[in-house]
Image (tube, rainbow, N blue to C red; front, side):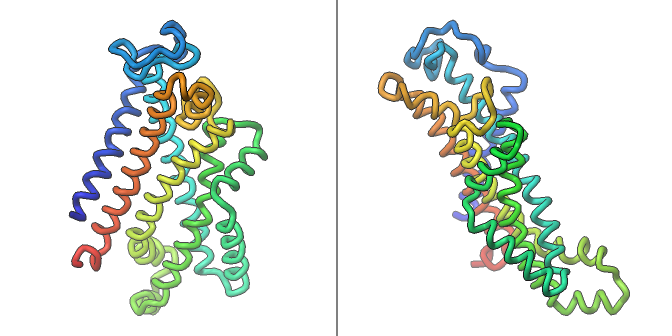
Length: 269
């Protein structure tokens, strides 16, 4: 049953990845073409109908999958690198510096990820795909840093670290050979969960007009554009909404499955 959760997550995320990669080489229609007629219902010609400008809606949703995964991967990579680096440095810092950094991380974590991302976007030159990745990555780095700090301190208290130091092993090698391998399973699960939050944050920013600008068809942007025509063409809300929910569910299932797989105690239970 636990492996079933993992495979469901792999399936749902895999479908989104396949669609995102497919958009790089093929699309049903030109995403900027407005020759399909306004707000047409789903048909064999246009599987999800057309939007208010006459563009093929299924094409827009496919592009949205690519943007969601691009921002998600970029944000978790940035947040993971920054958070892991800060967390390890905090664990090695002197008491005063450690306490100051820990308090700073607690303050950052107290702010919602979306609010921090909005502040970063507002302080930048303007909304763009790169800005969204930077904003969400910086916002989630505090969560990763706090977790890494706690886990690193726990590892540093183990006897094998003392034995390594007594044998003359340097701190750099201890970090690479002992600390990172021991904290990696827990951190990977946390990063996987943050992936889902990053996808939601990107959709929220795009809905507010702070994400990737047009003609990028983010799911959040599609939801925002379709709210004025929700009764005339409900597919405009249903299609990107379902796509967003399925991707986030898949990521959460995948993270839960990885936790069962990487945690020996849970696997044995």
